[in-house]
Image 1: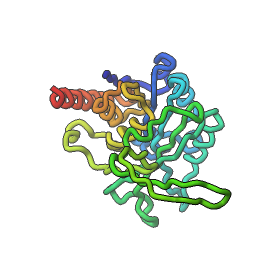
Image 2: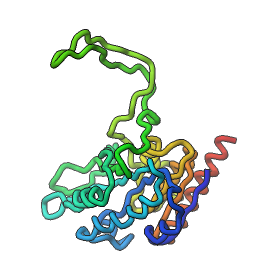
Image 3: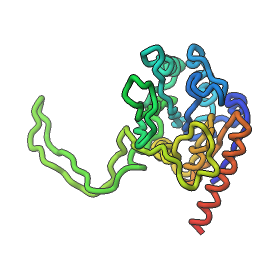
Image 4: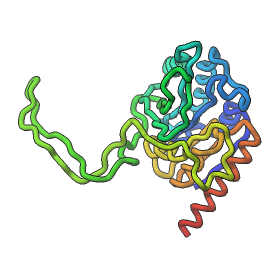
Length: 267
């Protein structure tokens, strides 16, 4: 298991990496103009083309069955949902990507954010794109162990005969919704000062779904390196790209701390 934080523009840095060297990409890119003070922001009108540009490099880096999961959600603007994420999804598909699934992150216990004239926002989308319609997927890797019920029977036209419950021990596939708190882990308080972190458990959940054991995960917008924390804890190699030197250095300290903790617990 290895990790690195590379500084610079994500496209420029990705161009220096070897082709087909990454199993999965898990990332939360800057939302259009909503992190302007931190990253300068990408105008909504330019966001689809900007996403297609960095994902063009992502395609080159991914192995044949690799895929990308992007955490993003639009904001309410002038009384209606902004359409830049919708236009981005369509642009990415038009660029040749297969949209494998839309997954949902239920931000359990999250702050009451969002437009004050609407219900509080308590979830975000995880858009899953792949080179083709059959990417690597292990839907039971993070599944629940226990008693699993199902139905068995014989079909005959529009009727189903002989239905009976089949209850067995095993592992169920994960659902397409994951409920995870946004609260920081107590071990991260000194090493995670990023304004928009997401929990490492989210990256872990996604990683188990789309990355094989011992594989390599890239995050082109590393931020607080939550994806990197998940990689260290699960034995994946990690490459993080961060444009801001302050957050790159913060991430290195956080990952070194996580690695030391993992070594201490496994010694």
